[in-house]
Image (cartoon, rainbow, N blue to C red; front, side):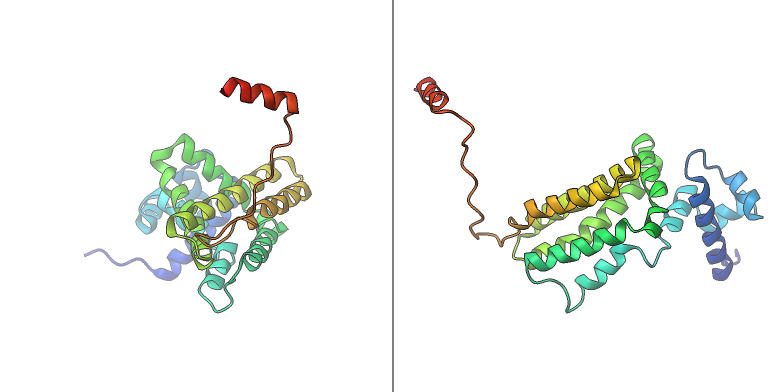
Length: 224
């Protein structure tokens, strides 16, 4: 009967795997060079973690300060926002955490995983799907709390989370964090007014004033 893995050794090894990934990224990741640097063997890495992909997933998830964990804690507490304005404030706080300097160091690896999941969906696709599911699962209950159906809440959660990912990706690429923050604020301006309960009347859409009287007459004449 095989001896069970030592939890302390496994945890120590996982922490060193995470540090290696942060320094070197995922590109060309091979177990043998990794094991050599960590003073172990590729066989032992597989013994502790099963597969390379599972090892990467665990290394990325061992972050008890990641923003989504804090948001999940707020969601499950008495401090969860009860209205659209409160939800907006929470999202603004989340944005500040996501693009803080200490979080930026983790982003290249996370976005490398995103790219790898597209190029190698069989290996890294499940990891990326888990990340996206975590984000939408965290946000959706907030929208349900505002009176939305489950389906609509998940759509709103997907919109918000995908927008955050896109803005973080763009600002990481061009370095313009201030413009990304301004864009996120603009996005919330557009979305907040639509966070109304199902069946509630939303804001009246603006009238189209772009057509001249002549253009309107032509359009009506064509319709006839």
